[in-house]
Length: 288
Image 1 (cartoon, rainbow, N blue to C red):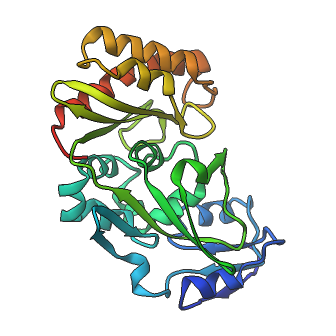
Image 2 (cartoon, rainbow, N blue to C red):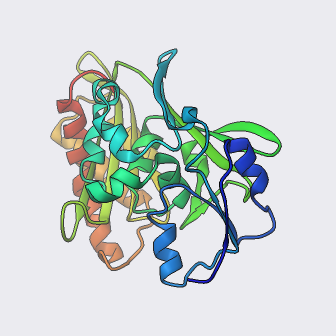
């Protein structure tokens, strides 16, 4: 690796001030699980890294506030996985984290870095999008919030300015919503997925009142399938409705071929996994 400057600010606002909006070789670093690999491979050669390890403790807290779960951006994924509050309020997130990479990575990687990396194969973004999660962002000009689906702009691309950092992730808590995330891997269970599908269902009585279906890994960024959601609304999640929703999602998305499978293969996976994810969400019972 080439030599670089290392800055260690004490707050996220200070960290943002140390970033250069015009220099892509200046980057923030949290857990570093992705960035360090890129540096070792020579893909990224920084002139300055702004370490977020020493910023204020509030950036790594999990708390419930006004029917919202708030997770500081520097919270390690393993901490979220082991959180009793997360398990009680958002069991789908706990389940998702258990096969997200491996425990060594989850012990170090942070939720803010996980989102900012913007790899379309990441497991949490599609679930957070289905749950209408928001992120808080800090920059030299102040703070702003945006939905997770607006953060992810493309393959390894976000809508963040180069001198902005993620401060927190907030997820609305809706007891009537049932959620699930399923992924298909071509190797081990914790491998990068060939396909990920997240669903969030608002159930009234025995019918699905509203449905969010998000497809990831097969696409350049997590993609909401409005057609699949429409196909599920007003149904009981019966087999015919699940087939209709799977077909609608498969017809709507534009899958990409990669080492995990061809575009045609991934389209067929979508037809099957949308139904499986809906079944898993309905089986999860009440609570998001």
